[in-house]
View (cartoon, rainbow, N blue to C red):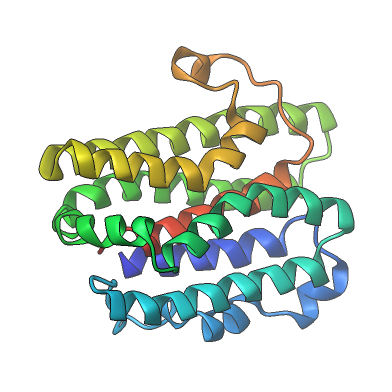
Length: 247
């Protein structure tokens, strides 16, 4: 799982450095990977294990909060006001889940209750994540190649197709993760996993992916003007999901 976390952290850096949402000076003066990996050691140190006890979770939560704060600061400095509003609205679900997970209470208790079993499905879960990894790689390549296209109609069509593929692949990843837990850990753990993933991703799906469900994943896309913000939000979400799901 640490391999995937490092991979996604790299994609965040590559994506943000290629998006028009960033102010120009940030590309030169800000090194997101260096800054935020220092604040969030779990992204750079394979020695840090997934939290299976309350004490381990307390330590992990310190790093999670620091990492989210780092990304939030970077958003404030390097994104225009409009993109800040959209981005923060989208990842509000992520921060809400982290806050509840890192506070004493029934949600934290339930998370720890299922952690041991969920950890045992690592190899099966990685089948889900590897497929989505491939999509993220394609995303990053797509963003870079668009800078060389001059036909705006072709660019728009390419973006629409890309948005559909991202949304459908992401929802396939969520379904795959839930079914993986269900097979080994039972319905209760699967329900918790489903709720966990849904809460983390609900704003992304609501703002960008609501029209892509089932067979609609193969229908022509209508696109979205906030695509760069959407891409940054997607990679942030998946990075945190890779961290929070046992490995």
